[in-house]
Image (tube, rainbow, N blue to C red; front, side, top):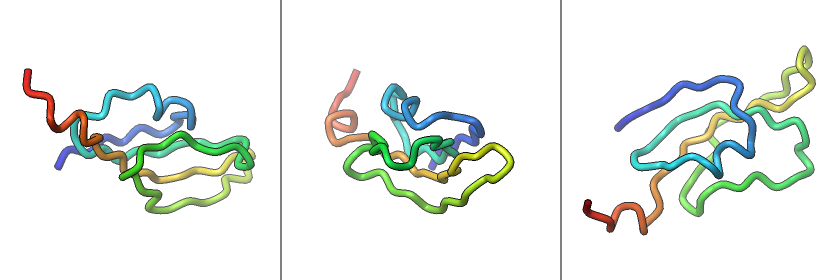
Length: 73
């Protein structure tokens, strides 16, 4: 299982990532009232409010979608 530690990613960045294997990443959520675009199988593992930067930090595991798994190049 591959992992990636990337502190400082913004919530919009996760939608643009090409997830080909399970990926663990920290996201900064500065507007928690806005929905975060994550995949159907993605899961939030942990979160906490960072008072210093006035953002929520969310630990997310992003899994490849079913379409990605079926593709053989």
